[in-house]
Length: 121
Image: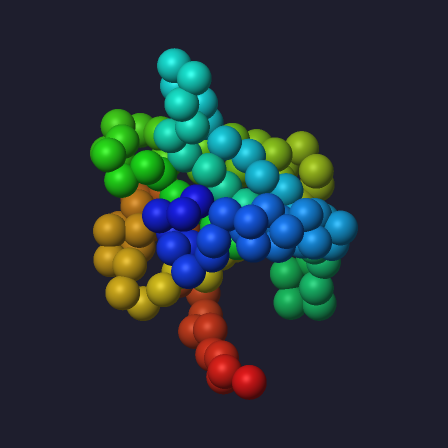
């Protein structure tokens, strides 16, 4: 996760995850030979636009283990988890600079369905 969120220090990361877990955040990971090679942070929520959905906050494969199918395995697990929890959609946001991630999402049959806007407060 530190490869995706390098601004978070370990102690702050654990504190933040525990806080988010109170709001439904969950972590899932793929372990190969005792080593976590891919991790996802996600939550299930409901909104008027999408109904019940699984939102992926964080999805990363160890940079030394990419292009070996681990991201696809974890992504497919997330889809099945969403289906098993009666979600109508699965969605995520991805930084505009993450071209390799975008290729992956498009190969996984995701559609670009909106623009996400934000403002720093």
